[in-house]
Each structure stands twice: as structure tokens, then as C-alpha cells.
Amino acid sequence: MSREVSTNRSYMWVWATVVVACTSGVLATYFLFVEPPPPRRIVMASGSADGAYHQFAERYQELLKKEGVTLDVRTTHGSVENVQLLLDESSDIDVAFVQTGIADPEKSDSLMALASLYREPLWIFHRGSDEIDRLTQLQGQRIAIGPEGSGTRGIALQLLSANGIDSEKAELKDIGGTAAADAFENNEIDTAFFVAGVDAAYIQRLLRMPNIQLVELKDAKAYERRFRFLSTVTIHAGLLDLQHNIPSHDTTMVAPAATLVAHHSLHPALITLLLKVAAKVHRSGDLLATTGEFPSAALTDLPLSDDADRYFRVGPPVLQRILPFWLASLVDRLKIMLIPLIMLMMPLVRMAPPLVRWQTRRKIYLWYAALRKIDQLSIHGMSTDEARQSLEDLRRLEQQIAHVGVPLSYMEEYYNLRLHLNLVRARVSTAVPQAEPT
Image 1 (tube, rainbow, N blue to C red):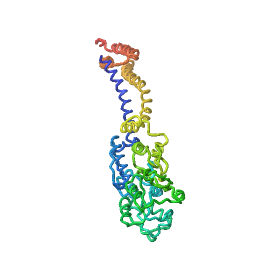
Image 2 (cartoon, helix red, strand yellow; image 1 turned 120 degrees about the vertical axis):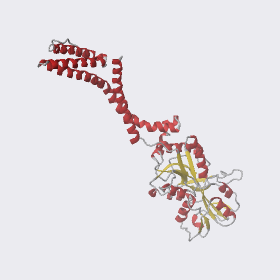
Image 3 (tube, rainbow, N blue to C red; image 1 turned 45 degrees about the vertical axis):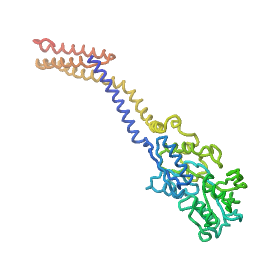
């Protein structure tokens, strides 16, 4: 039994070495090469509390909560402020809704687009019965261009500037949304720009307001070519209200796109998760988009994230399709550890049997070394005291051999050793005629 225990311990020592080496390699790989887990909290800049961006952000918040991710939604003045917050390294904003045409790609190298979400028409409303079809006709008027930090203001200033209109040739007012609609009613403005979805309450209100007309840009195609972030859209007659035939005729407008923009530090796993959520929210489309048209890799004016590009080409990762988000993320991060684990295990497992053989033979060779030393001493002659001491050494060596386990495959060498020990003991015993061999 003691031999079996000793043999098992020998095997356990070898395999324990293999396990420790593999574990060390895996841990080193984990800490050096495996990316950290995705954070459980991200912060999104939306827009004004009564705007579409904020409403969509709240829907994202609900869906992400089901995946175990907390989304903090920050209200802002709009796209311009959102871009500034994303570019501010001291800000905690991770992702934001941004209207195309606001961020300058050359100055926003730390930002990346995740997807375009839907078209946001540029609504231009004008007071009076005079037909307005070119922005050059707005000189000298009171124009609401949207509040500071809003996407409406950003695009309005670009288009007005392209038509030679600035604060010296028109009275530009920093109001938008519901406040601009109220200003129309109070006769405080003549024209207003809005970038909003077709369902925005103030848009529906203005469409039904007497003496307020929706401007159709006859040169919409020219804007589309000059400003690559714009696309032309046609609001067909009756599309917004069939009962009241609003609009009364097909109206061509230009539209930027609402996009999801993130800081480059956003964890890749969260990018695919956000895109899955965006698909649930925006896939059904709206009056200006067909089902499945959004989210899309098109209509973005910032470089598309590599992870987002992969998502649109091949879909979400396989693991995220079949596993809960956090489990899929863990498995995806740990799969990189399979490479060093396999690379370590293959040679170590192959080395284990030779190592066991070497360890066993090493024991036998050590005993033979001690036996040979005594044998050589007996050949050259030894005194009686030396002979007695050698016999004692042989007795102890025999006890060691008897109590140390040796695998069955090495029993031939084991018994040869014992035979040789008895041979040496017989030779040494001749030098001690008065003492019996032990």
C-alpha cells in the first residue's frame, strides 16, 4: 500500500506541475491580453426633454435594463452640445444622438458612428401667403434658427450662410421647438427652422396653424450634392394627415439623419448591444423609411466603428444570438485564452510520461550510485571498520528501496538492483569474518 501511495504521489506531482504551468499561462494571458469586461453603466446624451432624442433614449434605457446594463440619460440642448460632450475628455458621456452635419470629421477623430437611425426632415415654416421656395428670399426676416447647442441651429446657419444670409441681413433668433411655435402665434417671427420627426407635436401644430406655410425647396437636389450629410425626401400629399390632406401637395424637403455616435473608448461588446437595441427601436421604420431600412451603416458622416461595420455585414456575434449578453461577453473574452492553454497543454501533456519515467529511473540511478561507491571500495580493499560501516549503509539502502514505490513497468530494474545489492553485500561481508551479514 505504501508503494502505491508513493507512486500515486509521484504521478500527482507531475500532473500538478502540468496544471500549475497551464494555470499560470492562462492567468498571464488573461491579465495581459484579455480586454476588461464591459461596464454595467453607460451615459447617453440625448436632447431636450420634449424632443424625439430624449424619447428614444428612454426606450433604449428600458431595453438595456433587461440586458443588465444601466443607461443614464442626460438631457442637453441638442446635437452640437452632444458632440462637445463626447469630445470633452473630462466628460463621462459615452454615447449620444447626433444629427449629421454637426460634427466635423477632421476635428472629431476620437468619435465614431455606430449607425444612422432615421431621417430627420428639415422643416422650414413661413408666415404669410407669399410663396417661398429659395432661402435667399428670407433676407430681412425674423428667423428662428434653434437654441444654442441644437442640431437645428447648426444646419440652419450652414444653409443660410450658403445663401449669403447672416445676422446682418436677417434677425436670427435662438429659439426652437415649442418656443418657436409659440413665437409664430405671437407674431414674433416670420420664419422658423426645425429638425424634427414627423410626429413632433409642434410640427403637427404648425402644419395646422392658419397663415403658416411649409416651405418646399425647389433646389433641394443642389443642397443634397453640396452638403453630403443631407438627403432629399418627399412628403407626399396627405401623408401627414389624410383626413385634412396635409400637406396639400407633394413637398420636397432635405433631411439630415439622426445617428448614434460614441466615443472611441466605448467597449466593443456594448457597441453590438446598442445596435441590437437600436434595431428593436427603429427597425419598424416610420412615414419616411421602410421597415428594416434602419438602423443603417449609410447616411453617417463620421467614420463607422469597425465593430458596427462587422455588425451590419454579418449580424451580431454568434454568442450574443444564443446566450444572455453578460455570459456571451464573458465567453467571448475568454476564448482568446484557449490558444495559450492549448499551446501549453500539448507539450506538457506529452512531457508528462517521460518525466514520470525520468523520475523513476532517477531513484534507481541514485541507489546504483551509492551501491557502486561501496562496491569500488570493496574491490580496492577495506578495513574491518569500513566493512562494518558499508554493511550498515547497505542495510539502510535496502530499507529505502523496500519502502519506495516503483511502477510495475520498472520492476525488472528494481529487482536487478536488489540482486546487485546482495552481491555487493556478500563481497563486503568477506572483510568482516567475525560478523554475519545483515
